[in-house]
Length: 185
Image (cartoon, rainbow, N blue to C red):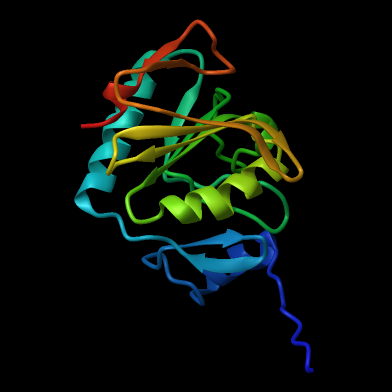
């Protein structure tokens, strides 16, 4: 049996590919565990949910956290995903000199219509291994939120699903109550 070795890319090489035009600005890709992966297309329900959820979280978390929309975070030297929403520490320069790293992330959110299994099976273990304390998936089809907490090297130790009529407090901000229905259009 012939074994094929895979060449993994690091974040620095990935950025050079973008700078030199090997990967163009209009290509929807992200670096996941050393591989340049295509991102799912954003159909109208995905885009509307991302906008609705990010606007709501910006109002709830004004002055305590920054809500970034579809911007990169750097998990390690081989992963720079672009979650739909990242709730991160305030930075007076708005992360001008670097992308947020795991110790600067309060919460990551992916919006899923056709990508639910990928977000659960690929992104959740990646985020857990990186130490992201809290990760949500907004399921646009069922109007549910998959909540992942207690990260470990093998994945998240706590996972539960909340329906549209529930409320949820963020781990980082326990006094802030999020009404699930407000995350969806």
